[in-house]
Length: 284
Ligand code: L34
Image (cartoon, rainbow, N blue to C red):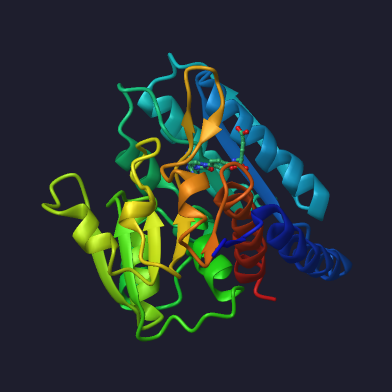
């Protein structure tokens, strides 16, 4: 069997065209959704993701601006910048691209973002609401992953879902979303004793460990849905996932490629969250 490839670009394009028409409706009511992305330092990967985010905003008619700050900025200066954006009536979404330089506390910065404008869904109140199932702003990558799984037409309820990785950005929140969809969820990590034994039980396998090629066909139950969240650069500068794609596709039923899988969905759900934030803040 050869898996069907879950084309993130194609699914993203469908969702973006829905977002675009909703943005047009809002504009007719005099509201233009606005997003500010704050980029600190000159990490090349961050620069490329931030450019892609700005381009995507433009594509759907969302106003966006990128504020670039040198890596020497102090934490207080960054907090002051966020305080300004919290008060700016034209800006409905604030995203501080991670990682931040070591001398700045990511937690302090995220906590400073007004919760209604936290389009990353990283603020503790949004995280808490996500756990409770209380209508939170969902973090973009996990939100995109659930959309991709749903679009396979597969019923998630009752399935075994295994998540490899326990980060605050992906592993933990996607586990919660899968739980809300009534999957039986296991979370694996670097201290898991027998990874293969766990992942081989997965009907839905989400790999977000950040280790190039760590999952191969021996980890995959035949017919599983495999979602690869890895974005690793090889020595030659090529982008690859955490899953060995060529062998995994022989076993899986559906699989996401890297690039062109989860990445474009992450950006699309950011657009969706910005639209949602604008509607909530403007009460429409
Ligand atoms: N605050 N920081 C904050 N929010 C986020 O949601 C992110 N993330 C992660 C890094 N830091 C963040 C992103 O945006 C990772 N990430 C991200 C976003 C988009 C893509 C990859 C990672 C993406 O579009 N990837 C393309 C390839 C891009 C390339 O060639 O470099 C893909 O097709 O996978």
